[in-house]
Image (cartoon, helix red, strand yellow):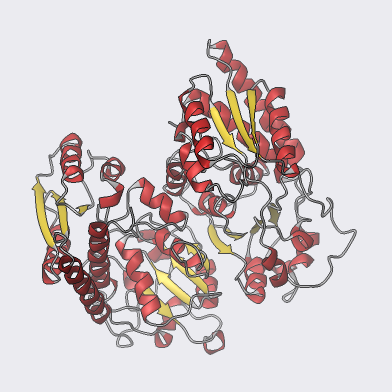
Length: 316
Length: 316
């Protein structure tokens, strides 16, 4: 199961109606490769920030992070992991992707994943189905993939047509092959700080923060967005205990969302050491990591790492 | 699975070393019937609060809530529910409690649960095991209870001896009989805003907030404590979408914990509309709801409601 473009259009209103100042940032406000706006901002101490600044005036304080470079680094690590795995006599990791319908964005995301998998030595297969496919047939497909020993990881690209219940399909994938981490057991394990497949976008945000050397212990973090695939797992990773089975960030985390009043959000982001924007607040926040070249490529890299972990059966 | 006394002793340090002013509050700093300190505080507008007040100076702003009265009300509702269920020709709901060892606090909690169950017409049985019991034997017991059609709900009182893995035991209870809501699938479902057995303490805090008429939509809430049985489910209930299958509170939630710096916690609680203390900060915060007579009795009442729901099979 993989997520396509999602966002909270209402949030934009809360973030204010003024136009974004131009020329103050790297990266454009275009739609990224995954259509999402997850962005990481680290700021200098509070004293440097005017007391009533709107959200976007943090701009000149922002550290702009190149996701593209970081993705390359992670992909190299996964590639080395794949080679070491093969050298031990194991089969090549294999990712099966189920893609339903003809949503152009979904096709693009899937193409990116397949291309990246191929580049680092992970096999993939693409199972295309028309948008009229029944839920039953999709469950038959995941059943077959679950039982197939050559398949390491399974991913059903979201969104699915309305007549299909996404939750049922997510739960139809064997937890040990659920490289998107959307199966109910992987959700539960993530929330209990146990080893699990961490949803790729949340994993990417974690990698970006950690590899950039941003301290989270005892820091104040605002996560804007409470989606189950992005905002929630990010909040889980960042607030939980660094000494648990799956270590967390030990940050104090505030989860803001479409119903967070604008003034409250301003106050919270002003107090925060780190702001993670995990919602489509296009005009106001897309400048913090460049898009494209932000979280998107790192997301693909973490998905491939999950596929290697699935092949190695280190989570289950 | 049920939780005994737990707490974050380190947090106390963060909350400051000054002595609690006496005579300004109802309720003593004694250990409650469940040994926990979950407390709810609603404050008047920010302007009324001095800018550098320590946490406990919010005292005179606090609404003190009687958990005992609310628990009676919920128990009456559950009792009526049981009677209606029996009138339809169904069997009486039955709660099986497994109690290991001779921890006096655990015995007291279990006694309270059995007494309350009996008072509202829920059958219960107590399975006592010495502290040397093996994990295997405990799993055999839960297996038998899982299969027994007369058993509606199963509860293993925590903590368990060190040689037993609590997570394994929690996952050994059938999700549909897991009235404490600690099975991995119930955790996952809670976090995805699906119907599930809500852990009793979190359910109690929710009831207290809602029945007191405290608005949560768009409000700022600080949850102090990130335990998987108390703090986390409270944060989940309060921040999530009011329109989802299991409605949430639509609040902006900040999760604070033992590593939240004292100054940060002060700032956050000063900004908050509601503070839920879900950690054992005995000396500093136990005054907000009276103990005993605070969350404890409501927790027992919500556990019994879960038992009725289990009998009615409305969650699974």
